[in-house]
Amino acid sequence: MDALEEIFGKTAQMTVLKNLILHQSESTYLSGIAEETGLSHSSVARVISPLIKSGIVIEKPLGKQIRTFRLNLDNKKTQLILNFYTKLNKIKD
Image: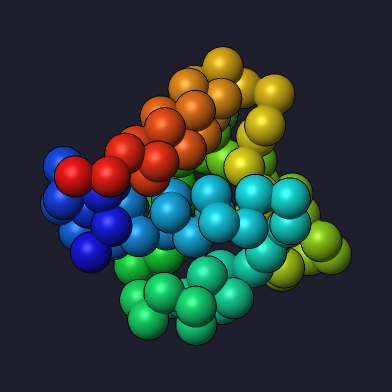
């Protein structure tokens, strides 16, 4: 368990967010996130929606049925989350 999970708990949304943070310079698919996190496709789809609505994640259609996702690095909330995550993981207890 990492420091973020110790504070906020291990939820599906936290797991997806952490995956996107770890791959912040890449775009990915729902199925890719599901495979890497061990969550179901439907769980990823459910918890990524609020992240999109808040502007933390950008959704980009690729064709008619495929959607890609990545962190919105221009969003101030995203920048705060990344800064917090980086600083939190530097702390040694």
